[in-house]
Length: 268
Ligand code: KIV
Image 1 (cartoon, protein in one colour):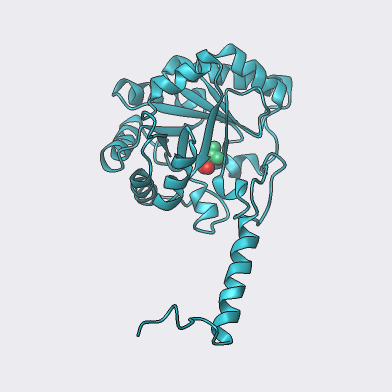
Image 2 (spheres, rainbow, N blue to C red):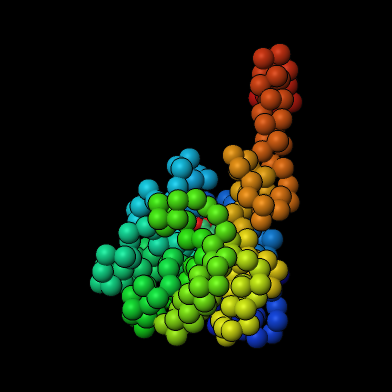
């Protein structure tokens, strides 16, 4: 039986009840349907789509048009999970008016439940306006991949005491601005625990340890489909790339040997 559709208040309530939140990325309807059937709570149309699906080196080239397209197709596969879409690089930084317009496009054209925005205090004015217009926002702190050119590397963030204090202030500012949850990416687990204890809203960790209120992974990493590199925080629950390559090799072998199709697979 199909469980009730998850809402933003239901996700926030999970923290109060001490129930861990599960989240994975999806970029297409087929995968979204499988994740939804498996019971994932939050499906994220991440801008990691640029790297995993489009083969780009960073998330920076991902456009509004592409983000809306992927969010629309994912929407068709999701019934129960909360659907969150990443706002692409430079779709919300130029001005609050442009950010609100672009956020609105996700809700109007792709029927998402929420958008995700990277950044802390520098984004709170914009985030507060988007939230006030009735559009839920998820925050994202720590290693925010849209700032890769400023960071220089994808290394662990907020290791120093000053940077950790900064991140804590950012998290509190995001909560005050009205975000309903915040992703903590690649930060020390002790800091993620501190942030999680300090906030009333859920923290969703990726490379941030077990104390977060939930966990998110790129589905293609967790399923062993994306194998170009494997960060330490990724646990592979399947080795689907190997399965796909072996299956395709078998198909090629059968076609070359004229053992596919058989007479049972042919029409008379
Ligand atoms: O783009 C993405 O996939 C993300 C998550 C992994 C948090 O932002």
